[in-house]
Image 1 (cartoon, rainbow, N blue to C red):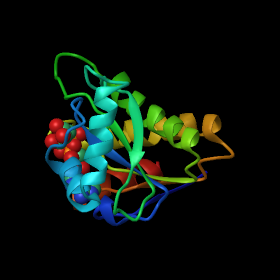
Image 2 (cartoon, rainbow, N blue to C red):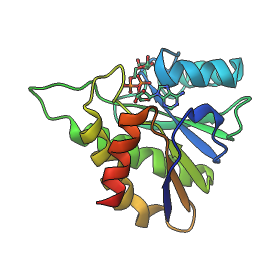
Image 3 (cartoon, helix red, strand yellow):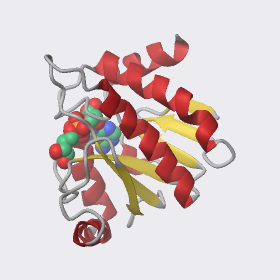
Image 4 (cartoon, helix red, strand yellow):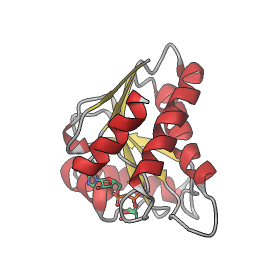
Length: 173
Ligand code: AR6
């Protein structure tokens, strides 16, 4: 598996799949979620509403992942996942790891050969960037054997200089 870093706006990346740091409603929000829905157009929201009406009437649980169309984005699929809100008094790392693992498995299921990840939970949900990057890189490396033969390329898309430094430090480690 080829793993690389491409800093910037994930809505511009032309991997087969891009991951959305969504919330459990799947109905949009700020951050990456807002950018993906804005640039991808209304088709994505329509697909999300359909999921809410069928598979996820109570919303997408934290740590799970589900694929929809990517609408007008260069990517073919958006894989929505819900990161945990950071909490000092409770270790929710397993839920953040589950986001990366389940997004990769969802990518393999639809047949995506490449996937781009934002720093899930490291914005509005408050996860410290260095730790978010560590969990991201470790989980992708640990899950790679399970998606071998399908997902060949993983791109981390840090937004801003400190995010980029955090991901570079993990990949160089
Ligand atoms: N491309 C790549 N990364 C981005 C972009 C972009 N266009 N925009 C922001 N980031 P966040 P979360 C970075 O807040 O913490 C939404 O309202 C951002 O700088 O998007 O998982 C959802 O609906 C940060 O490093 O996601 C949820 O309610 C990282 O992406 C909630 O926010 C993640 O920040 C999810 O919060």
